[in-house]
Image 1 (spheres, rainbow, N blue to C red):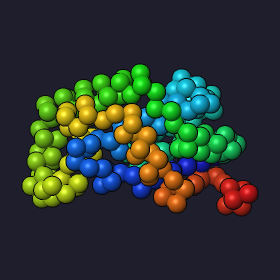
Image 2 (cartoon, rainbow, N blue to C red):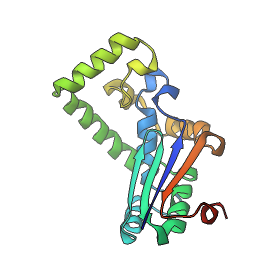
Image 3 (cartoon, one colour):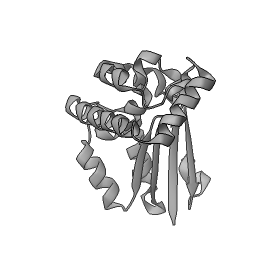
Length: 174
């Protein structure tokens, strides 16, 4: 008996200026890097302890846990969405990983073709830019940018929480 929680925040790459392309994706990734109550290792331990899975994306979080652990799961998702600390050392680690992925993509013909196609179709519109950004924009993003993006978009009135699985709606609403 499992429950999946998906917190969708209207904060994807369409909300980011061209010079900061990749900001939405990096902000989502950094949600897993800690809050005042838990660092990234504690987050991973807690999710593993309940046999769950937790993923971040440019537009929020996804969590899957046993139904008996739903209360923990909701508390965790709320903490991660509301209280990220964006630690500098973890930002540099995630930036390095993002730059390595961008470099690897240059050797993938289908990825190169997709990027060129989107640019040809959409031009300068945000849909014409890769959500992961490029080398220049990824190097340009600062912790201050993450904090500003989070503060602007990660708000209750800009978030949809979907919960599906072995759960009664009344149990979630109370």
